[in-house]
Length: 276
Image 1 (spheres, rainbow, N blue to C red):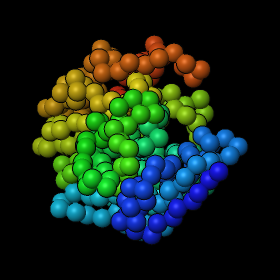
Image 2 (cartoon, rainbow, N blue to C red):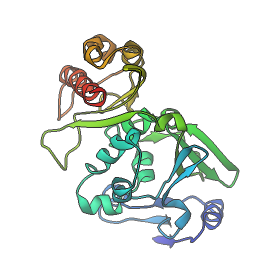
Image 3 (tube, helix red, strand yellow):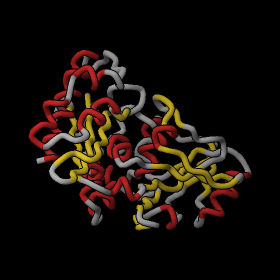
């Protein structure tokens, strides 16, 4: 038995949540495959809510609606600091998936290999959550609690992702390693955002996905890069500093040892790219 509710406003969506639990549908690119042959139960369809879509500058930062598609993100006029997010958007499945899949769905699905997470972590992103009890915001790093698990409370929706003004500085890039070049779950992926000032690294934000239960920032690597010139930066990246933040596993795609080796190489390549 299935019931389908399609609100037109956030208030209507919150009211629908107040009246009982539901499975949330945005793009459906994760929900439908996970449901198998039949999608049952009460479905809360968010595709009619315009306030959940779009990208806007707010208070020096940026707000991205949770139902904004990957195609919209890839084609938006964004600063170089979010180039990594746009590069990731172009690798979330094929064009059809990018047209339907949403940023919020990618985050709520909470896959360790979610392409959107490392670029957002590197931009110091926060999530905006809404429920009948009110609104709250969490750092993305806190929102993601483990494989397929988030800090969403019962009756709560992810409505937007916020990038602070500091996360919009510098340049970024996204690199992904898989068994083939496209349409693949990553073995390792890296997002790096570097701010140069006076020819030296003033700020570094580096995140690695597919090497832990959730994507992780690399604080030791980031600290080691501060003050480096572009010529020096790559030489400061040590495998031990990369490994310190990660906890990879052996699986069908790669061994843990291979993942750590690949992560160090991708981090080095990403830093070289954004500092040259």
